[in-house]
Amino acid sequence: DILSLKNLVIQFPHLELAILFLPEKENVNRNPGIDWRNEFFNTIPKSNTAIHLCGKIVFHTILSDDFENSLLFQELKKTQRIQLNINARKDIFSIEDIHKIYKKLLSHDFEIILQYHKRSKSWILPFLNEHTSKNIHILLDASLGKGVTPEKFEVPEELTKFDLPIGFAGGLNPTNIESIHQQVKLFNLANYWLDLESGVRTDNNFDMNKARLLCENVF
Image (cartoon, rainbow, N blue to C red):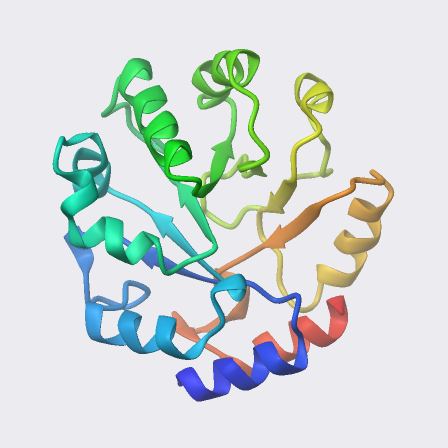
């Protein structure tokens, strides 16, 4: 319920609501359709929203010469941050294409979140060494969106020199969020966030009670 989400953001103004954008599964649970997305972006302040891009279609669209004229481009302009879940579990795009996607989005001043894990660092680190931007953020997600909590949250040594906003993901929920938050605070990062999806769901459906409890335990 979008109005309930709006009230949650009013109560917890540092909350970011991210929606999955996977055209291959649009209107299937967890993947809202365009009508719901339009209402969402018209109701929730831009500064409290994000889109997590998944699948082949969106990235092929970004690489195309017609990207700036696409509906995708118009929708991305409605949100604060864009997470790129690219090649998360299977190599589809080349490193050259991935870097083209990064550069294209940054050229339009989009804030992008790069999903960092053992495989993705092979294309993320070379890009970071050649490009500096305040609009690049890093999400540490070793389980690749599977919701598996690591034994210990750590900031990889190779990332510390870049001074980027860093997010932490992997099995977070209202029960463990407070202890994990205390652990993350010890890193003394200037800008960080905590990321989760399944942890605020019951039977695969978004659970507002869990979301509210989560916010109370964090904020």
